Structure formats: C-alpha cells, structure tokens
Image 1 (spheres, rainbow, N blue to C red):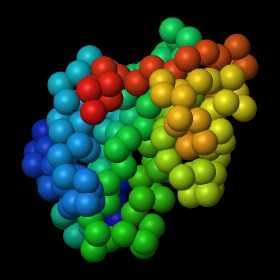
Image 2: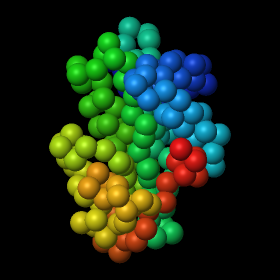
Image 3: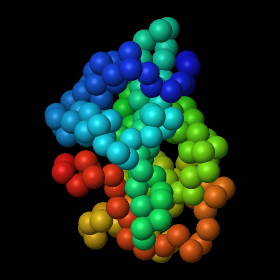
Length: 167
C-alpha cells in the first residue's frame, strides 16, 4: 500500500471511494469532499489517498479550521472502500495525515467520531483542551489531537471550513 498526496487524476476515484464508504448515508460526504476541494480551506498537501496495486482504495483530508480564531485543522471525511476496510488502510491514512499536518507546523487536528476508535491515534475529548464544538450535542464525540506546534493557549470555539456548516 502506498499513501500519497491526491492528484487531479484521483478526483473521480476519491469520489467513488467516498460514495462506496458512505453508501448508507448517500450524498453527504461525497458532496462535502467536492465542496471542500472548492473551498479556500482546502489544503492540497493534506488530501491523501491510499493506493493498492495502482488503484485508490482510501482517502483522508484535513482542511483549514479555527479554534478561537486561531488556525487549526478539521479532519474528515476519512473513506475506505468496503472491500479494503479492517485491513489497516484507514489506520495508515490517519498516521500519514497526522504526520503531514505535524510536518507542516499545524498545532491541532479536530474530528467528530467514536472516542473508542480515535483514541488509538492520540485523540481525546476536545473539551479537555478547552475547545468547544460548533454543536453542543457533539461534545461526547468531538475530539482533538495536539501536534508539536500546539500551545495550551489554543482554546475556544471550534469552526470547521465553511462547507461543513452546509451539511
């Protein structure tokens, strides 16, 4: 498996992977990836694909977000083809995107997801860091992962890239 930066030639494959991964919830995540790609919050270096035998089987993206008005990252969606789930593709994508974000000097990555799963990547409840979710009901699933550039003064309300607000 190769984890690499997404290229223009991957857009259709990323669409297909996202569509297959979120087939139970059609439209939302597929639309979101396209809207994020067109948004000013898109960071090309943080849109990564997993490739197996020349085919894209997974995708993850982090986009510009903010905490209390300071730069941060929002992670998601993370998509893996159903035929390649539970074999380490998602894990490899997570490690790669967190490493890339850290190498770019980003302070923090935030996501909405299952704490039992994402804690293995160093995520913890964002509220423990003084970061509040855009929707109060998200608090039990709203998590943050600090990176090397993080400072404890990074607190306050979290805001995703604009397309997230239109989901």
